[in-house]
Structures are given as structure tokens and as C-alpha cells.
Length: 389
Image (cartoon, rainbow, N blue to C red; front, side):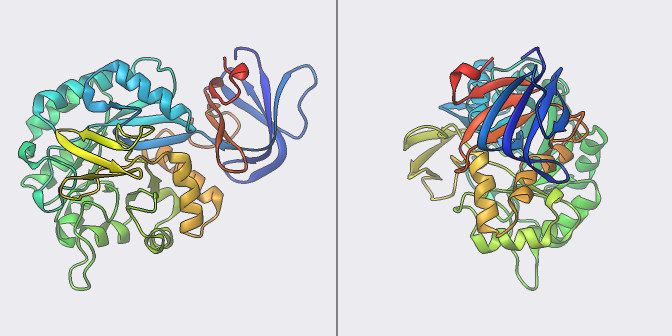
């Protein structure tokens, strides 16, 4: 909407406090102010009983609605973008999975194009490389036939292919050259996350000290905690770094979600969907990268039985985290909005509801169902189609 408007709800989850029975004034794509009463001569979208959240940011997602980032097709990314907007997501990192070098480079190139294009829904905030530089022991749903040695030359080729859009590279810290390459990647202002690894506590610590930022879907795809060898999981939980969390009730037990929330501060926990192309689709057979995946009751597994991403949506992850980890809803919301914005260094403009920030908003009803998604003031999804721009 080009003209100023108010959006009113029962609760607004602000950056520092909640506001009850208030309104947000949206002007020029920004949050202009939080008001107790809308001005009469300005349009007011009144949604009684609803809650306004900051727009959600999915840092780690492979696909939805039958489309995959590895399709290497900007139309696929646009479909994923549109689907995510229906679930309150206003921005995401298009995430690759292990495949051939040529397919990976093509996918990164298309991510670069999409990051510089306007999508129909959620904004492509950049790319996330999950693949190629892992080890076999905790490979999960990654085809180890395509694993490669970790070199600066390969990393630079990936960065170039993404045309400045690559934000995260995941790797196993026990790989040869891991410390040297981690330093190189971080020098390019790209985050390094550690995962699909059998690394020891010491190997993980060395990578973190070299600049790595944390753990890929913590506990999953990494050496677990033993009382004489804390492993990668122990290192990323105890050190001052971020962890990704898949709060679907399948990847992690509720007690583990509560454990994570006690060990890590809110800003160090990033809720992710890790959703694959089966998200929003019926149960059946799908592919993740080069591997066949069978989805039953919404749970995706390889033929060997490894979990293969999820069909989770981020607004459900927020509700699950609040209930299962026994934490405040606003903390769970910020794990899917402000925390990922902080991780991407865009928290000055996105990730929370505060005057002067972009009007990236998600409106939900009492059941947590998304009623409306707004990106920079534009309504990109509305359950009531009459309200969409």
C-alpha cells in the first residue's frame, strides 16, 4: 500500500515489550509509530483478537510446494517465496544440499539472481551452502559420493557464482584445511556454520576460534555429547555462538529444546524449518539433492532411515518451541525473527517491531494461523484476499 495505514490487533509483540490493543502506523514501508488509537482519516485494518509479530526469517530452508533450491530455477525460488509468505515468513536464505559441483554452482548463481529480484512473497535474503564439505559419519540426507575436499579455490568459486549473495557456508570442522578456510570465508564477511560432522570438542573449538559462528541444526548431523568427549554438540552449546533448532517435535525431544533454551540466550538460538520440497505437499516419494526421500505423516526420511529435512513451517516452530521448551511466546518469536536478523547483521532494519524499522510483519490468530504477511508495508499474503495489494 502506497498510502499510510494503520493495522490494529489485540497484541503487538514489540522489540522490547508487548503492546495490548494498539495500532501500528505504516508509512513508506516503515513502522512509523505504535499508537493507542488510529487517526480517523487514515485507513485502519482492524484485526480484533489477532497478534502482530515481526516477520519471520527462515535461515535454513531447501524448498516447498514441490520446488527445490537445487532446481536451479528462479521460478522455483519464486514459488518457494510465495509459499513461505503464507506462513508468516518475510525473508529466507535459499539453502543448497549436497549434489554435483555443476548443479551447486548453477543453484548458487540463481540464488544470486533471486537476491537481486523482487519475489512474489518472502524476500531472498541470500544463500546458504549446506553440502559438499561434510564427512560420512553424520552425513544424514547428504550423498557422500559428492563430498569434496575443502579448499579456498572451491569456496571462492562458490562465492563468485552467488554474486555476493552467499551468506553462510556449512562445513565439517575435522576436514583438512578447515581452520584456514574458515578464516578465509569469514574474511569475506560470510558466516561459517559447523555440521554433518564427527568432530571432537577440540576440533570444533578450533573452528569456532577461527571465526565459525555455530552449529547447523544442533544435535542433528553431529557427534553428540559424551561425558568424556563433549563433541561438536557440546562445543556449540557451551561456547558463545549460535545454534540452529528444528522445533518440530521429531528432530529434538521437548526436554532437549528446554535444555537448549536454558544453555543459550535467545539471540543465540535460530529457529529454522529445514523444510524440503515436500513441504505443503502430500505424503509420498520425493528427492533431496540426489537422494530419494520417503515422506510419511509429514516426516521425511532416506531409505536408510535418516531424517531428511522436514515439512515444518516456521510459525508452527515458534508455537512448538514456546510450548515444548516451556518459554515465553515472545522469546520463541524472537528466535525466528530478531535472532536470525541479528545473525545476518540486518537487525537495524529488520527482525523486530520498532519505530523506524521496515514494516515486515506477520499477523496470526489465536490458534497461531497466519492471517496476513506484510513486507516493507506491502501486504503479500492475506487470508482475506480483499486486503491483499
